[in-house]
Image (cartoon, rainbow over all chains, first blue to last red; front, side):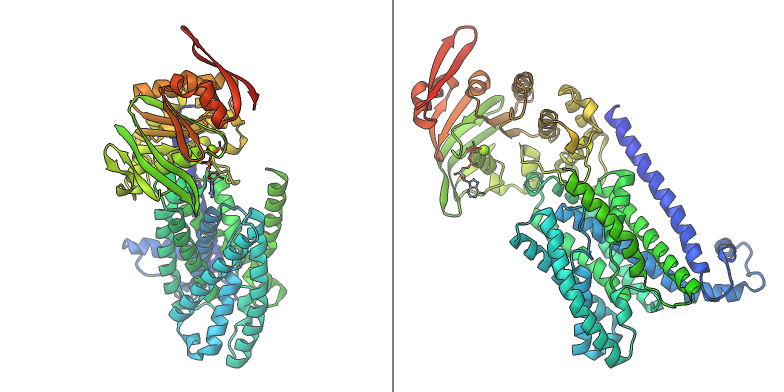
Length: 356
Length: 259
Ligand SMILES: Nc1ncnc2c1ncn2[C@@H]1O[C@H](COP(=O)(O)OP(=O)(O)OP(=O)(O)O)[C@@H](O)[C@H]1O
Ligand SMILES: [Mg+2]
């Protein structure tokens, strides 16, 4: 097959995967908006969307009977949670892509490398030290970001000390995340008791306390992280073949690695600040994206953003359905992602250790 | 195009690896660096590739100090066969070759141009490996991989080609084919080509200039006939050799025994 045909084929594959996952994402967004204690279903929300979409173009200007109430519930109550879950998933997916590329380790991801637990520990500790922080989202996000960065540096240094192989990186990550997860538990308990605010739930990740005001920091961080990752995508492609190769092409691998770590910490941190620790999304999503379109980061990054949103939103829907059907309110989304993600991790581990 | 290496001195931390390296080579010339293990061959290539900064001395590319150029400018002029890592990302030959075009694209541009695909297509068919384009790198045989690595260097379209042991892992036929190809490309594209090799017969057969390196110093430099002599080889490799000069076959090198 000629190179040009091969190349066109991958572009087609990318566009097809992108469009397909966007359609799927739309359906899942509608589904997510139709789940709740009110009795409106999937079709009601779809009809509302259809109507409101047309009215943007001046057709059917007033909503039919009863739809104003649906609109109120959908737009102001369910929408923030749905949007934040989607953005968080996109961010975690990209963070996973970045971390896997710079460590050249397809088993790596923010949670497994200890970014999330360290981040939550630092957030909790800083709230204990400066209680006023609890009410200033921007500070919490900043602190969470610094915490995630700390987690990554700790894991990297520990892994280097232990020899720096693919496996020691994961083991170092487990050491760091276990230590900080223990610490995070104690701190979360203290915060919850002292300030009488739901904080323990963040240990397993949940979108049930998401506020409208969380949308803005989420969007900003995702925009920054996404743009940066797209700009870095070619350098990440080069770095996959080794630091020497990347230098040989004119990139500075140390800079690329630092920048990528920074942005994955930002994307992880903002999610931890708002929804807590959500593991394995950053592991699973890049694998799905690469399975669909290959390893080129120029297309893996955007596709991972869409698939990340899709996956986490789906996990949140599952968590909510479980909550409603069992009557146990507030089943954490992080429990769902771990249940699905951990077996996948085990599968990758076995495949890698047996293979090459 | 001219490459001039002036008085290079290089240390790894405090251990001397290269000392007083002086030579010059111009376009269309294939130079081979020989010398025993640890002589400093790879180190010298890396210094010329701007991957290592010498403590003293300058590498001039067309009269310009290498360290006055930006890394990207260097990448457009010089291709070095860096060690290649594959870490389970299922990258394909095409993925790899596309990255070699990055130095030629604009810094923030994300698209591959028609021209880039054309270069890749040409190089692959010239090396007779078009059928490998969609294969995963970690599933190639070491000979196939070696050819892909050479393809990458050519896709980068450099003026200076630096290859560390281009015939490693190749069977006899591909050793010859690769070397013929390197010689042909060096001439046709007017490249400055520098290789390292442990095979004296390759240096003898294919190089215009041979540099014998030992303990970080140049022991001999000149045509293969001048450099590959029993005296030079025994004093550096500690191996006895016999050398015949055949009017048709050129230099014939026969290793005899270690001393
Ligand atoms: N990264 C490094 N740090 C410290 N010393 C090094 C490093 N790389 C190489 N050396 C040392 O520098 C000297 C030259 O090494 P170099 O790799 O250039 O030799 P070479 O001629 O390429 O050998 P070979 O034929 O085995 O490939 C050797 O003594 C080697 O041990
Ligand atoms: Mg060497």
